[in-house]
Amino acid sequence: MEKVEKANAEKYVQLENVDMTFSTKKGTFNALNNINLNIKEGEFVSIIGHSGCGKSTLLNLVAGLLQPTEGLLFCAGREIAGPGPERAVVFQNHSLLPWLTCYENVYLAVERVFGVSSKSRESKAQLEARTHAAIELVGLSHSADKRPNEISGGMKQRVGIARALAMEPKVLLLDEPFGALDALTRANLQDELMKIMAKSGCTAVMVTHDVDESILLSDRVVMMTNGPSAGIGEILEVNLPRPRTRLDLAENKDYNHLRSEVLRFLYERHAKQAA
Amino acid sequence: MSAISISKESLKSIMQSKDTMVSKGVAMTENKNEAIENVARITKTQSSQLKPNNLSIKTYQFFKWLLPPVFGILLLLAIWTLISHQSPNLPGPLKTWHSAVQLFSDPFYDHGPNDMGVGWNILASLQRVALGFSLAALVGIPMGFIIGRFKFAARMTAPVISLLRPVSPLAWLPIGLLVFKAANPAAIWVIFISAVWPMIINTAVGVSKVPQDYMNVAKVLNLSEWKIVTKILFPFALPYMMTGIRLSISVAWLVIVAAEMLTGGVGIGFWVWDEWNNLNVEHIIIAIFVVGVVGLLLELALTQMAKKFSYE
Image 1: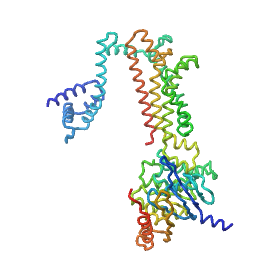
Image 2: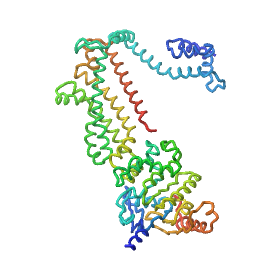
Image 3: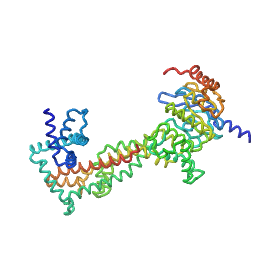
């Protein structure tokens, strides 16, 4: 029995021989080929690769927004049959509903996961408390009643993160969450995400094309080969001690070594021809 | 210099007109002539570095805004006068104006069903439009939602809609008369059938255009169909629905005149027909203006409503 549980913790998210083929007007397109990946409980995994390598497709498969052509995906021992709130997604373009305030956007998620239609059937006061807590966690209490188009890009992404975390997911999926932000805002949010993840201890999978971001945040970096028929090229263990800080790492030998490993993979062995 | 003096003269004459708002504004400046001179100076050099007082700029801009539509209406009146001089049966603007003053001095008289004031006729038509239009909204908007949401429904209704939509609304009148066996419901039926298409189609387009990003959010949150409709589809499709509603009300108002000409009873369309039988051409022209003004007001009211509902 103990063994089973341990196996579950080792393979909290599990991808087995996953193939993904899209049928387009020009014929079939094989995006992912034979992906095998196990993610431990509480682990932070980054998926990095050139654009068009199918890393977002991989994330959408775990989210359940796409169904694999072949292979199986599991989360916490159960097969992934479709999207669900236990696998919350932070979308690249934040995907907040523009007609709802930040508070209402988060509340919509909270209400679904913990409200009357759920198992926990929490009271309205409890739901409101959860929403406020999530918004406070990302430091946006002062803007809770603003609409998304009244706040900056960084703030929108914070609301997106708050919405995902408020659902208390088993796995947090982040699809290039900071890709559309300027460098300073991005660094800020990365630091905050690190703190939040340390606090919540939840499992996370992040798609990124930023080498520094992947090493700073992750326990492992999954490097993908170029598409079509992309696969996992290498997996890099990031054994840097936590809590990590940007400034300490800048001088850190191991960090710089890891960084050059990823760079070598991306620009030497799997360089993308200029389109 | 001559150009300036001309504009000075024309401005003076306009400012001395009845428009109270403007004349009050001018009275507030200490020196009337100075204000006019300032305006004249701006007309000469728009990017002038001088800073004439604020009020005269506003007056100038008001006239600049007002002038083209006034010219348009004057042109219409001129052409009308010209034609009425050529064709003696057509009354000119002045004759029509006198007739209108007389008509609108008592719009709500009632001498039996065949002789009622123009006000009653307008209200009767508006009531029919309101009824037919509300029914169309009641049927069209939910139908648009279903068509926009489910591909099967869209494919199923596509041939029927494409077949029936181009049919002239009046072609439906005999069917209405046959089924309802009365003129009034038949007229409402015609309004309904002409107003329902824009509402179905625009709602469906709005719903089907919901960005995949929002639907992905709905999927990840596992929202119920009711929540998807109320929190995502409805707010997103609302501007499209408002466009549909605006088109519908215009069409409904267009059609009611024709429908009432055929069905009779009380209503602006029937009134036009009645006055044609009386050979009272002034009243027909007045009716044309009344129909135009009411249509314009309906459109304006709905545009204002649409602005209120927009989330941006």
